[in-house]
Image 1: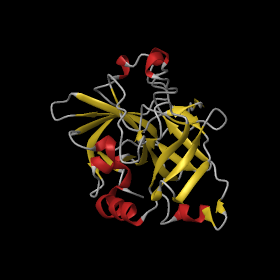
Image 2: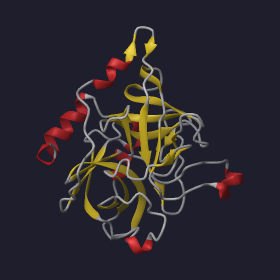
Image 3: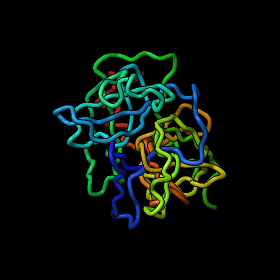
Image 4: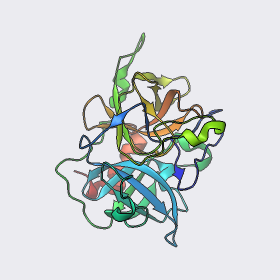
Length: 270
């Protein structure tokens, strides 16, 4: 979902009607060491002022994958942390200005902030390598297309990972919002692909108490295919302000995305 500023949630009415930029995991559970290559990022402007935070996936020692609306202007620098719990003693960990890794943000060349969901992909190229034992992986071209069948879609579960807002309530009860910066995981199911509201650029996943889903706080987090480390898409938008029903995920398996990633950043990829 759309980025959460350090002060308030940006909930915007966009072309999809009530769609708004999306975020972290709701009705999930602490991830712990399950996905250590998923991190929390804070974008800064050219003066070093924090702008917003998002989630993302380290694909290699030097390339961090996230949503395009997380790396759009005026973002000029990004600070990233990979601790599972960034809520406890966050200041001692350098949050929100001194990350474990830093880098330069880039956005999909066709990204348009007025229709962000069409090309909602961004990356951060790290200033210095951040080595890990394992990384997230990109999907193959059209990998998600096989989930669409003549009679609908296959029963496919994704693994959504992100930091931040675990629940969202109407404005009158906004004080109840659970906005801890803890890496969370949930297992939403595929609702819609290749048609309807999402075309061929996004998918809709479930968002309920049974499967969990995504909410406002940290867009750009990965939605891994099944229990793999393959990023089928990045968290992009929500259909309402209560983080209920479904969550929108921008697909990473389309030609324009993979061509950009491998063409512009191939030296940073395995």
